Structures are given as C-alpha cells and as structure tokens.
Length: 188
Image 1 (cartoon, rainbow, N blue to C red):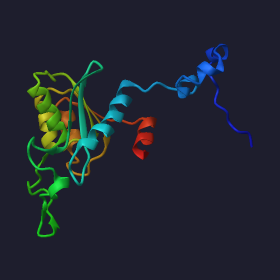
Image 2: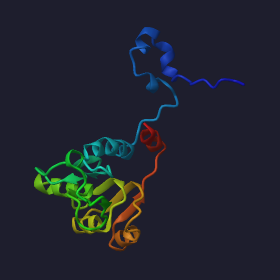
Image 3: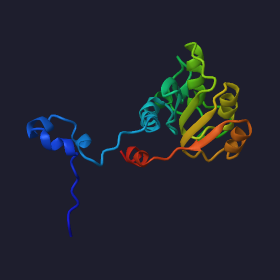
C-alpha cells in the first residue's frame, strides 16, 4: 500500500530547509486551511467555557458583529458568590439532584455575555451570538429582547426543544454550526 504524502506548497522549493524548519510547519502544506472567523469563535468557546465553575455544564457564549467580538460569557454564579466546585452544587438537596427547582446559583453563559456587554456600554443590537450549547427558553427571550439577529450553536440542549422554532418565529436566525475542525477540538 502506498503511503500518502503531504504536498508542500510550491513556493517552499525556493526556500532553504533551515529557514523552513523555523516556520510553522502545518502552513507549509497545500492541505492547510486557515480557520474561518466562525471556526475561530467555536474554538474560543471551548477555551472560555473552562472558566465555568458549574459541576455539570461548561457553556460559553460570544456576541459578535462584523467579525468583531463584542462580549463573552460563561455559566457560573454571580460575582462574589461562592463557586460550585468549592462548596458543592446547591441543587443537591438531601442527597438528591433537584432539577428545575430554581436552586442553581449560576447564571447562563448567554445572559452573562448580554450583561457584560451592557455593563461595558456595548450595543449588541443586530449582532450575532455563538454558543457552545443551544440556548434555553429564558436565554432565548433575552436574545430576542436585545436584538440579536443570529444564534449559532454547536451542541444540542435536550431541554426546551421548541426554542429554535420560538427564535425563528421572532425573526432570529438559528444555525447549528458544524465544521470539520470542531470534532478535532472536542476530542482534545
């Protein structure tokens, strides 16, 4: 069986090997593709979500417009409140996980990104948002209220399944963002 070799870009044949060794090797091959702006945002979501202090979910949101990041957010408790990983999840009561009981001390990534923009005097009207997990209904309401026109999401959310229909009905484009690069980042 023949081994498939990567083809170097044509211009590299005129560059001495010692100089090529100093360059970023993956960019020297014809197969290299520069990530799109949205690919870059998707990768940043995974990094930003690491700031989350939740014991169950790592979620991040980025608000952007005209290829410019306006605001970011991740899920976690209010500023100054205790972190879940330090004291435990407030939804665990008498050894049972209480879902949907309003006990969570955290705020969603989408709401934090919206609030961070407001706190810094940044208009997000007409902007787009990319989130690591599809928004819930509460976040979707604020996305509409703030004039966000597009929502890109990477992973499905198994609750509030009608959110896509709700957002679309109110004029927000909803796009399940897929890229060959996302699978690479998720497995790292």
